[in-house]
Length: 640
Image 1 (cartoon, helix red, strand yellow):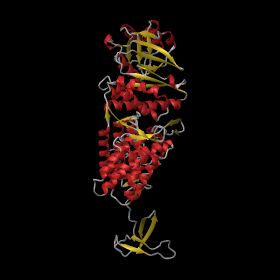
Image 2: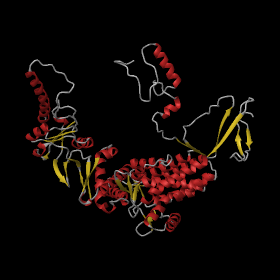
Image 3: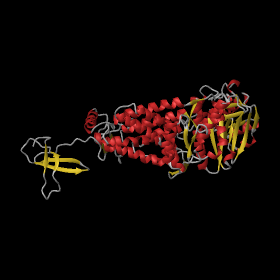
Image 4: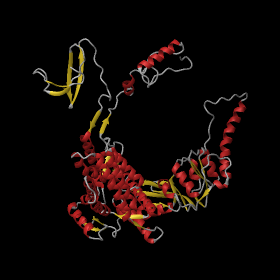
């Protein structure tokens, strides 16, 4: 038979083959050809051998055990996987959303924050990991809307699934999704209501956005306490041009288990927990007014000679001079700190017992092993400069504040710097009955901080409660009528996908989503004043959410729509999925490509390694031979 010709192989009764279409590989010779046909998962593999010759070598492209899938089936499989992921966070959306408990064997996390849940789930599906990425991106960029962006992306995929099944090319779908997303973002910016933060109305707008971000959180019932704290903290950063860019570094959140959540408070300055200290710590002064602060990155501890140091002495008294010199080094450092006029000495590195007692005798306060973030906040607040040496310290590098005190908070003692000249840094002290509650409170406050920051930057808000999604959906449906061809269907489907937000809000609150969505569609379509009508969570009806004070930054919605559309496009653009198996042998991957390494490194084949060994052996200098993985010859004393 000719090589590569197609034929029909008909098996006899003793064979287990039914008539099948196959490709027969043969050789142009009179020798007998044996053809073995295997059917494995609808893929036919052929092994051929000849009586008088060797086997024809096969071409191996992928490692054994590699899973590959192509075409429409694997695209639908990826969409189904994303739908399963969205089901895990679907019920956490909105003020009536439920919490999730995630246990990883070491700790237990209770949260309804979408980004936290997505991160803890440790999703293995390669396509579904895209949803984790957009959720984390939304959390870093905006802070809130991490659940909404996942639901929007998956709902877009769900609406596009019928088009994929009917054979519409993915590139046509992607092109019109991007067009619809661009129109939606543009519409959000047109609808956004701008405000001036320097007016009382602007400050009230910030309070409302902070409260809206806390609505769906565990501490929603304490909005009256936390919302003003959050707004004050962010406004203190906005006094500097680039202050908002380093929000995480300038606003610290300290957690102290115990007590009531209402005992949480805001420190307009810096507060950090008392560090490890020696016996002389209790004798130090713990309260100062207008102190001078010295910040160091220097170890104030007596250091002995190095173990590998070699000193030759001719007289035992010379050894005493060496010991005295060591003591003199530490005393010179301590004298320099005292003589510069500082009242408080903080160091990132350890402060030993000698230095602690030395400072206590002279009425100074010191602390070592201060965390890097706390030290930078103190420097920012007091105006001090961190020194890496005690030589040449002058008054210009010292900082100051109005008051310094050590205060007992619960079971912990905190060092508080208040009345700082640069009121850029703030510290929130959180209290609560359990560690899980305090951890969730911290995540909630972080989301609210980011929302207020975004509101300050964009200076524009939109109404929440599904109102903005319904209005944008109405606009896209009207625009779809101007499009010819398949694009009209895709844009219409994208508009329907946006309705997932109000629908899920209703479902999570226990209301009939069909009735409420019907009312919302009619209100937005027929009433000119129905632009800001969304879901009324309290009464199971619709209401003007803008008048009710449910406000969100316009950047939040713009980013959600853009990220969700991009994620959907990425998943729809995948036409083949290749999953490589994990190797049990660390050197298996290299072994497959090049066989044995020949002692010459992981990148050489047997032939090349053997040739180099032979050349080296002829030169008489180096040894030859094959070594195992991770073993190489040592050059030097006794080596080749």
